[in-house]
Image (spheres, rainbow, N blue to C red):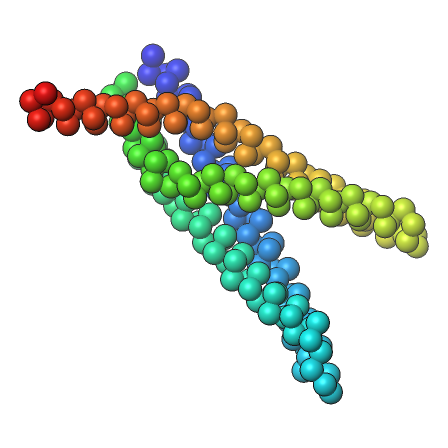
Length: 207
């Protein structure tokens, strides 16, 4: 019993990890792109004789995007930190794991999911959107390389870029699906815990 439950718990914990890490990756990429975009337009403004309103707007958008992507990254790190604490607790008990230990860890993970539920579901959506963006970027690179590649080396670099974008895009699309496989289970546990809390409250009131 404990081995089967422990195995499922590890898979659930892995889904937390995967969702956090892919969002950390996307957040870091978004930060780099937004900084590059913002600085590029800021330099255009500095070098311009007159104020260039399009570049000014792009510069502002670039630095706003930097703030959002930084928050995205920090949120992902925060989720990962909480999951790491649960994982560390599991590894301490793994050698002599018993059913009560597994149940205790499941309750701990469920409490963490309840606390961060809204944030995690936002990360699921963000991961899907970012995955689609990488797919589109990969397709764009593939399309442009067919018509603009000037030699075998350029074609090879473009091909590598396409593969990287498709791999990251696939991860961004698949990991949320993997994560949401367990969401219904966690939701059932939460509903059960709420019912148990209500029953306990009634018992304490003498009803």
